[in-house]
Figure 1 (cartoon, helix red, strand yellow):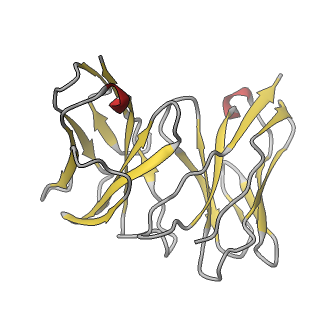
Figure 2 (figure 1 turned 90 degrees about the vertical axis):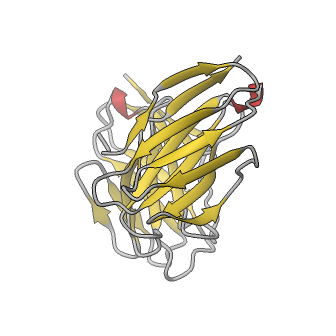
Length: 116
Length: 110
């Protein structure tokens, strides 16, 4: 158990809909990362937040957005869903802003999103 | 940031040591080497990381060459539960995030 909690574990929704994925980081961790993993692509970095502020953006679509709340939990919002958005979405957390100093990033078990 | 090169797949015998190689010839002096693994569709699991010195924890050992251009992850006694994709990652490009490549699909054979 990494200590990173993600909900829901599984979600099935229709095209055009909007969903929200939730992440609770490990106790004390200030930085949250979101990753997407689809069948034909590896783990793709989406976005990073540190203490409530956006720090880095990766391959995140404009239809997707995220935020980190004062209690440090984070939500990933996916809207106007398409079939190709079906994927595993992982949240990860770490104590500090970056890993350059050796801080370790721990991952949750992911949220399976199926768009039909 | 430095890229890593791993074999796409390898088999290991159960109960034997598994030696997983990784090349990172362009690594810079302040970049760490991280190892993660992902057991089918589970969240990536941290294994170990190092900078210069060899490291050991309850899961594995990490051997980094003196010139830091390559490293080896050693699973001392491979079990069937060690079957996974193993990722060797050098500190990611950009803003301190982990960049995952294709990894090494390791299959432990009875």
